[in-house]
Amino acid sequence: SANLSIASASAGSAGSYYCLIKNAVGTRQSASAKVTVLLKPYSTKELKPLSLNHGKTATFSASIQGGKPMTFQWQKDGKNISKQTTNKLSLRGTKASDSGTYSIIATNAAGSLTLSTTLTVAAASTTAKSAENPVELNEESLFSAIEDADNDGLPNLLEYALGSDPGSNESTYSPIVDTVKDGNGEAYLSFSYTENKSVRNVTYIVEHSHDLKTWEPLDLAKVTINRMDRGSYSEVTLYVPSDDDSGFFRVRIE
Image 1: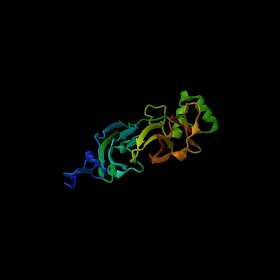
Image 2: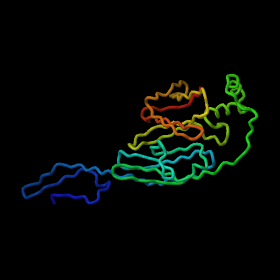
Image 3: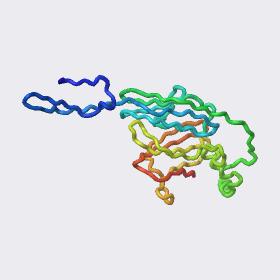
Image 4: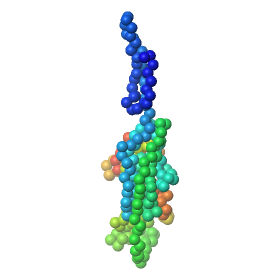
């Protein structure tokens, strides 16, 4: 007929439509009309539940497709987690109190999708820790700590700056590099590290290198910076556009 109606549009309905008009004299093709179908968020993969020991890092990654633009929001037990608006969620130094139900809500103009899973964190065992040789960060002890790393000096120095002892088996505070996507499908390289809230007179400098020989401070004008309050320390994440930079990253502590 002269009219075409698509009762329930789907992905296969997208395309260019035209009408062929025929009579005994000949055939004429109408102008084309382009149909774009905005798909609501969907996923073919469920979030996997995690069961971890105290102090480990929990990472959830969602694979969600659909029409753009799309927004992401992570929740814990039904409450939004501040500034967690990409397709991945990483929690360092997990504690028993971090156990719960985690969800990601993806939303676009066509609708929304919620994926949920659970995190179970085993409580830490309680042990006595010797404090016979506390580290005092004056100039003399700094050099002594570096020269006497076998005596746990250097790990304690890093513990002071990062909030955890990198020399222990429970260390989860080392810098982490990952890739994430925002709701528009734009890819970013994420670089995360931690800052101990109790430190004084310490500067954290994120540096970038192409060859591991020459290091330069990262141009912060090109990145987005998020900070997450994790109790005794802050988790800092820098999002670098993946098509804007590559190579190696590090945190220099002065």
